[in-house]
Image (tube, rainbow, N blue to C red; front, top):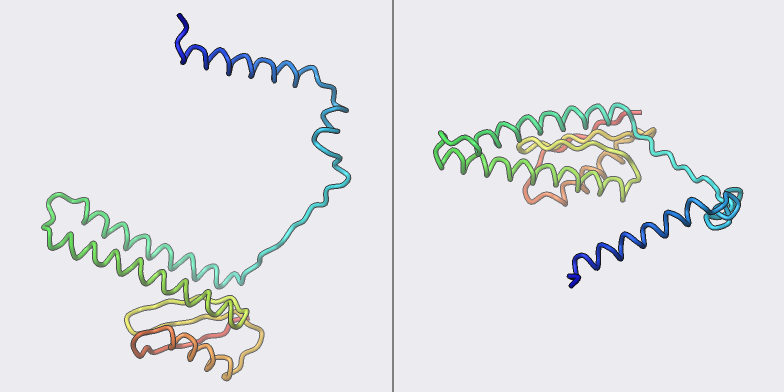
Length: 164
């Protein structure tokens, strides 16, 4: 008697065999008709460029965050550490993740409201914003500061720096 597993194997194997024979015997012209004509397809390319200084700042910040995260993870995985040390490391790790999320949220807000690429770094009660813009106006900087301050729960010291 044939069991279900053997029946499925034979069915799938025969299906694969039939499809592979069909693929081998099909002519190139028929294959082109099935796949479609290449002359009708248009290549669409989009370039996303960002200021190289912003990218360098972002990479540097990411490296620092990764180093901190690794040190906290080492503490969490170390069996000789006390539960209090592990708890502090876990809280620091969660704070680090939260801070990174806030920075990304602020960058997205600047991008959506002002259509500008930016880099945001939060350290204690200071927020440093680097904006890539051709226009360097104090009015724009004040508007960005107000927008970012509205996103914060407490009063923060916010600086805006422009780069071409």
